[in-house]
Structure formats: structure tokens, C-alpha cells
Length: 78
Image (cartoon, rainbow, N blue to C red; front, side, top):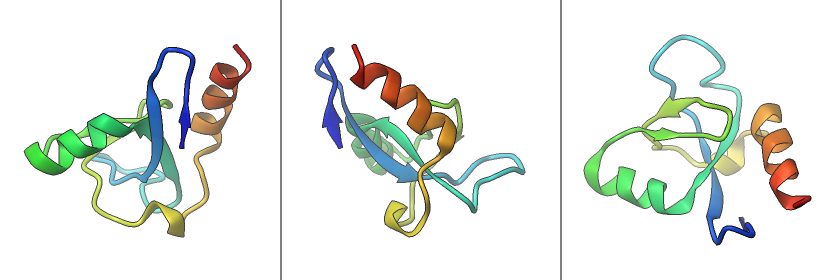
């Protein structure tokens, strides 16, 4: 978890994708406030890489999505 220059806090969260794909393989970076909102409203979140899902599992059990990590690293360098 890290604060970006824009003041956005990100948190990695496991993907439960709506279509077939890597939903069983990675945790993803998402705005932290969107995870809380999703938990309350049951609406999907969208990761930095574009994956959309409703969070429900422990993200610590999965490696970080390489695409999310690459995008996140570009923010950290600003």
C-alpha cells in the first residue's frame, strides 16, 4: 500500500474476473476506497491493468499482477 503524489491510496486485491482469464492467478492494485465501496455496495472494482471483479478473497495468497505492478511503478517514479 502506498500514497501516490495525487493522494490516491492503492491496495492490492485478488481478482475475481467476470470473464475467463487469469482470475485465479494474481492479486491486483486498486484504489483502496473503491475496495471499501465494493464491500458495501457489492459493485465491481477496476484494477490498474483494467481487470474488473468483486473482491472477496485474501490478496496475500497470490502474486501481484505484472501489468498492475508495471503501471504502479510508473506512478512511483513521478
